[in-house]
Image (spheres, rainbow, N blue to C red):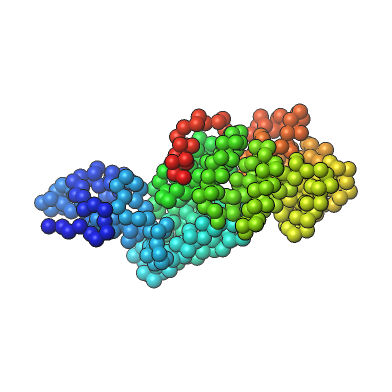
Length: 444
């Protein structure tokens, strides 16, 4: 008689068909049959190999754990997911199965690759502008050690999409490499939830496949446990693109409260309050965030943009000059300062910032087109500004998700060129309050 494994909440179940096995694991019949024939998934047969297939749940769980594959059927899950709950990186063997190459990869390399991936995913909990590059490096090294580690490819795709959207790496370059990484992840493991989440962000920011992004984010929020902050934050950003600003702020607030050490999500929440017109609240949130150790591009930009709307010219110019002195490489901050100079009759200073932002660059190769567009709006060079907004949208800037609602861009509302621009680009219609929001709220 089979004995119950210590610590399991229920005795092992016997699954008496391929369909039952596939349903238990949350995969297709074809996938589990391939895993059995090529990877040793523990399947038994009655009366020989051609007899009816059956399996025991505890053996399937151990096989998934040994390869770091998530148990996608959360209603049947009996083992914790390795990456999220491991007490030591080597307890989280996140190698995804790919038999053609795995046999040629040394065990020590697979273990080291798993350690690096566990470390990198752990660093997402404290995500900031500063550690994104290091996270990227860890995933890249993990891939070099084990070219079949699907979670390493998925993580690299996530990191690159974030870097491109935030303007930390030239968006066209970051997204191109991210797409290749995500394609590899899904070739190795077509049901990799982390890769699906990153692909949804890619669709939202670059290809503007709004329906695909919505579906992917909802699916990722269901599959990833604990709840994926990337999926929930993505839903909040999609709401901003839809124009549902207060709902976006509420969801991003919950996401930020659920993972208080993640600076990027906290910065998105602050930005959502700015987009919703809550300028004093956005300034207060930035102040409180800095007091608790958060910093980075999003906070600088939100503080600058909100101060323009909420404070007198003397107050907001002084505030932005102090910020710009500390962060000369933050282009959106510099663009906001140039805008403030221009609308307050300091055109010479505004022109000097414009020269600095475009020095040795053509307008087509500005690192953050949205930043220069802000400045040009202040200088009343609207046609050039709109051309840069179109470039920012085309390249997949995070800021472009809010162009329909951006407070500063509202001054362009009566410009013919801006109407033409909005007619050429795509923004999503608001989805009904339903599955996506309900899923997010349940998860949190």
